[in-house]
Length: 422
Image (cartoon, rainbow, N blue to C red):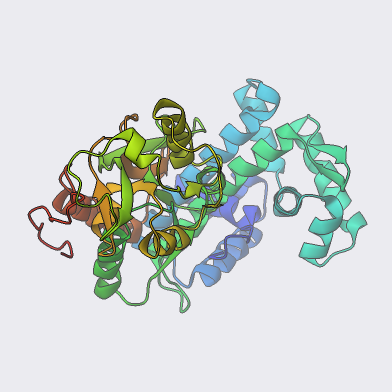
């Protein structure tokens, strides 16, 4: 259940949900049209999987334990997201009773098949990934279409895959399953329970803040785990939207590309022209565009915001349009800057933390304000561990935000902030 690709048993979750609502195993069994032993067995299996008791059973009924109350909050969110996912199929608004019927018919095998096809890109690859024969995948996949009353698949060059409706349904189901995974982590009583956090990071994100916040929360409990994935914005924003990441840290796009994402700004981190310490222009107080045009430039790859800004500068300031070297690798750019007379543009925060580099503050780069902060899923409910990390990161961002001036081309540093390396 803690693995991101694991689909929980909907039968067990329905049994738990009914018992939690009624405080009675017999009434819950009647509600689900099960025998009481069958319902009790489903709940016992769920408790074994979570490694804790979810109910205190007695003559007066079955009442949620402390762990059960924690898990119910997540199971309620799970079923609510399932309802929204089904309600959104093909953009229609279905009758509430019909949605409840669909929820009651939904099986874990059907959800597992759709998610596997969505993630791998085809029926053939999904069957291989699940370790089953393709005909064994076809049946639950097609049964799901019958339940939702819409086509979920299309034929492509690689074979059958999900269509737009199927992809959106899969995404929403994946987010719903994330609630159950978070519930298991919050209970945290099973032997292999570890609270986790997956962070997407952009190239110019202030790593120091991330490191400080991570160290703070992992020092409090060394059993937990943080995974940081650096990738282009297009990739990590989609992974966040799909539920594969918990949050994204770095430059905001304002607005984000998906309606389910929201942004929380921390501070401005503008771009600046950058060169090596000792560069011929480093000691010049006012550098002219014509002086900048005498040097070669390192270009970020097309599609990056820095590349858009630099391309516009080339037009406005009549800089050399010839592109000799372009890369999205930040370490490569800084190494080439430090070992040559080339110029480029980087965020002011990054320049501040590299002793080999200085900024050319005049002329300033005209561009829209660049905000650094968090991108989150709308209505995301973090676990206590995740909430603690957010608290630490917000504290670090507030305490360590750089002044707007940064380091000048002469190499003179601004007043040192507490906790920021000189």
